[in-house]
Length: 277
Image (tube, rainbow, N blue to C red; front, side, top):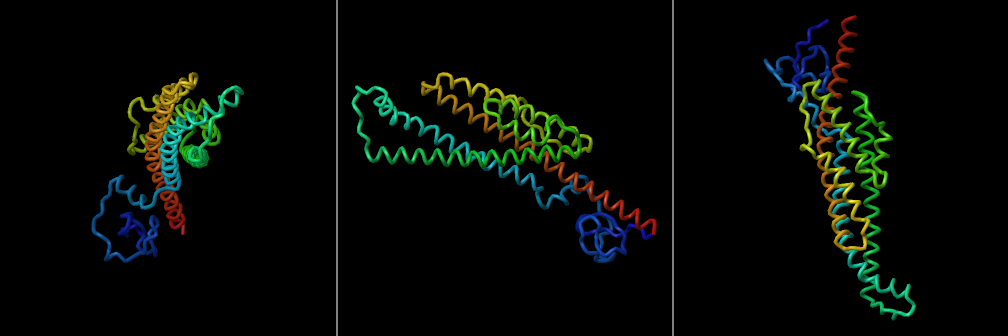
């Protein structure tokens, strides 16, 4: 068989000069005269050759982060307007319970303002469902892709569903994210690739803020406790996004490595078949 002495101008890999295109990136064979004399690439440069398009699940993760940010903004606005809605509705609720009380007059502007608040709550719930769906879909595929390298504590379906359990989602997210990050670190370290780690203690903040955010709801009649609960839940969501960003970055590197390994395996099979001819 011919020697692999043709160097691709696009990715810098060697392949047989009698082949019509590069086995690695499918660039056309432009002839040995156009090939550079010496081409050296580090592993990071080789990874960048496959990094022209982001992996599909990385795009899903960024979309989930975008919708989660919208949820945070709408959640804060809805939470603040809820306090005004309580002030407006409370006299009418008290009069309906106490028949002796004087029925307050409902002004047209007040009615429209309350209807707008209900519409905002409806929009918030719709956006929340979209963000939850996108986050679960991303996490499902993240664990599924990671299982191509190693085993995981949670299955893809279990990981996605556990994050939806009311009151326990913070605890579930902590253990799922911790398992994913630990295994990402092992896989990237074994392949001598860069592992991006979250800030120390950031994972613990998710579970702490989620649990503490529920406690003020015991005294939900106090406005200060309601505002405190909202602030803690928003803080937990912000930390969730930061950890999610780290996982996505590592997942991107793993996806590129897997693509490269599959290409190398394919090239080896083709060269082995050519060697037998």
